[in-house]
Image 1: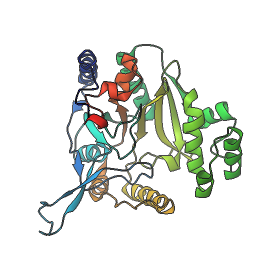
Image 2: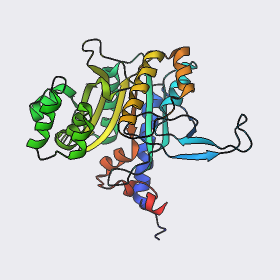
Image 3: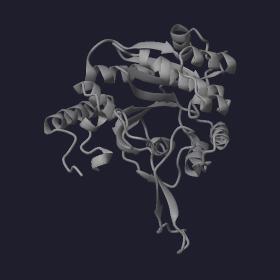
Amino acid sequence: MTWQSTLTWQNAQKRALILQQIRQFFAERQVIEVETPALSQGTVTDVYLDAISCKYNFLADSPADHSTELFLQTSPEFHMKRLLASGYGCIYQIAKAFRHEESGSHHNPEFTMLEWYRIGFDQFALMSEVAELLKVVLGGNKAVFSTYQNIFIETVTVDPLTATFEELVELLNKHEKSADWLIEMNDPDLLLQFIFTEIIEPTVGINQPQFIYDFPIAQASLAQRSIDDPRVAQRFECYFKGIELVNGFNELTDANEQVLRFEEDNAKRKNQGLPVKAIDGNFIAALNHGLPPCSGVALGIDRLVMLALDIKNISEVQSFSIERA
């Protein structure tokens, strides 16, 4: 066992300066820092996210012989939206997030996330603000913007909004990326996500931050449906130097529609043999009370520091990786 930090003192000081820059950025815009719980009674239904859970015996309404399952949050999103529904203005948070996934050069199950919400912003206004923050921290070239549909057409000459399952399988075969498990799932959206990750992502945002927006509606359960094209949602991501850095939405505010989206997630979970997740009742109650029109975004602090310091492994920007935690 190795007890030493994976983050050097020199880089710890540089990381601290970046956090100061971020806080100053929001102070200048009157966006208020908040804190929300790391533990929650609810979690996400997202097919591709799994929360880390624990048992707690002391909730007021728990039977004496019964433990309640609590979840470490995959992001502070639900709690922050509950704050907005309670009457808060524009807010941000620098928080620990936790995901039950393998560690790697860009992944650690515990990481630091910057998340913020802007009342009255649409996805384009928020993308512009994200680009401003990246310029402050990273300097460099101006960001570029592409739709999900156009980046597919430019990169693999396939329209993701009209392609059939068979056409997507043919594309995978052409790039020698096909696998039996992918085909057996019989899920066109899963193929789209695999193609995007394996074939398109490595070509995006190489020399400058690149925003991809208007994702298929099935890949954005928390985002508003586009007014211009009902096949897509107002969701965006940003990539730079091979790293996925940002995920944002023009937030869905309709509680009934949100429940339907969560139920669709759970149907996919069941189809893939994954456990179905209970829908977070507190979050839905907040939406029923009223979430103001807003856009929100999550940005990986550790990955941002990696880019700023030209570091290739996430463990070198965290005080202790999971192997040394």
